[in-house]
Length: 520
Image 1: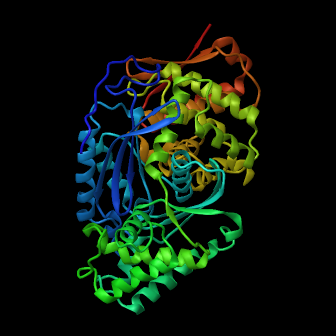
Image 2: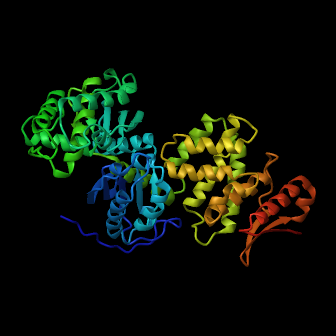
Image 3: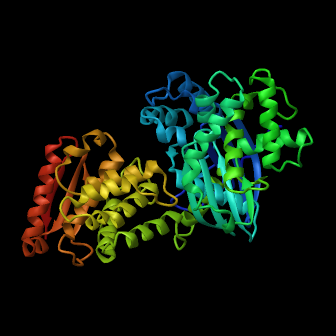
């Protein structure tokens, strides 16, 4: 039964968070390879309450063609589902909603084209998350909703990937993602829904080949309980319970029983079991093979369904971000990740802080009308400033290109692939000609971020502190004016030369006029 959302009037939680009709709610969208899910929840004093849950079998992963392109048919299924979700999310502010996409859009070569259309339909930005980040969020959901102090193995079998997490309490100790799922394995080994012993054997070998590298990482001695978080685990658990095979626990013997019933039926179309939903039939065989491979290879005597999942982990993670925005003394979880990256790549944190403070000061003065000066764009600029020199660890020459490559490919906890790619674009644009950003010239917020970062780096190129008010940015009749203290400029001719070169570069790209003036 659908639940009705009750609108409340409230002041915005903080200056950086716009007002909402439902200020106490958060929403997560999980765009999986098999199903799309929307969950609306409420957190109060650490307790979680589900308000509404919607699920649609979209089978996006089945829409990847042989060239890795998402077909128009699959795209339309996805967009239709997102349009329904958008109706449910009317009245929600952007800070209350987080939509994440997983393996199918990690693989799709035309994902950017899909995301442009999907963002417009949903009305919220969709983030593609890396496999390890997906695993972290899954564990976050499970550990919060099913707390335990036992060392545990958490498994999530999705449509095109399988995540494995080794954790203790709320801390994920090891997390990995493997490119095999119920949809992809079913398409490969049961393409016409035909069930034979040979097909099951071949599918198990294929799954084992993909998962074999995890044997030592997640060996039996490292955990005491095993939990499964996914539609596959839930579906198989329901079948076993409905047929009186187990209490819902998934054991090797119970999985063999399931596969025998499939082989007896001969096809997905003819398979009829209590507890088996029709939409699960096309992908059941692949899911069974992955589960049996995991159970036999990792000595899992019983895999029990978990209460939490990716979508709840997204809500818990979003709640931490919102609390950080409300209370500036709290760290956004991505801030911790940035500090870890600084340590890993031996960043000169003193210089990074100089650049960050200057870039954010310029951003506040520029005050792009379409961007909240204290919001997500400011945070992105701060992170790009903090990490703009990570490429120095590779080489000083062209370090901005090394920095961009690293940010575009690194696993960074709490960040989506989408946001890391944006940070990579920012640090790529930190120096040199602007022609390399030609594809982004229409993105006014990004180009303003680039301008502030470049100016901050030029001003602090000597790696020394500077007076706070010797330079400022002003928006004058559609142009941006860089105002510099004349006396300071005369005393620093090399910096003035670099600034004059910067004005030339912005003029050369023809889209944005940057003027410079000296004032007493």
